[in-house]
Length: 199
Image (cartoon, rainbow, N blue to C red; front, side):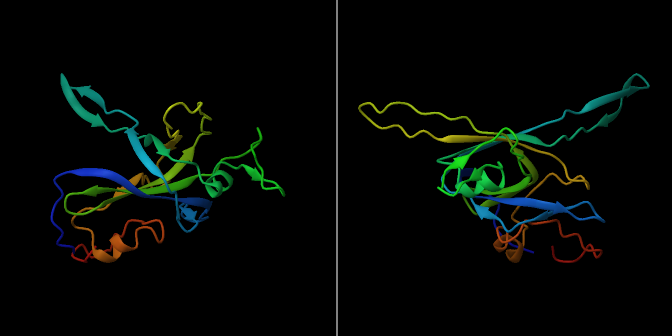
């Protein structure tokens, strides 16, 4: 087990990756992912929880609290949407002249998204396992006395997998091999039968 010191604060955003879901395992229903690819030019990300707790009342009190975890909605702001993301995830088509086209029949693909925040002691790496992105807006403005960079924003939803898995993140307890391999493949939970095993 790692002996990293605990973070006191977090800041920044870096190493945003996506991994397309290419299919689902017939037996488990779990997704099959492509190798993660980097999305350069990350500016900001915000992820908001969906689903609220509901109280069940009995005996004149709150008898049970029902936790409704419906996943997350989020926005990723980047410099420019990469061509490979537009093709693989948004379903847009590149013609023989290198022109990218969008059709009303384009089908978006599901994907995992991974990213990290910096901390005062170590970086915190995150993964959302089953995301769907909506088409981005197109925006620009004339250049005046100074240039202003216009970014692009991807809105997405993250829903639970068939086993209920929604997201994961590294901690000070994450071992070095799991931490170092975070962007090599989509990290899945390691739950050995022996509770004393090093996770």
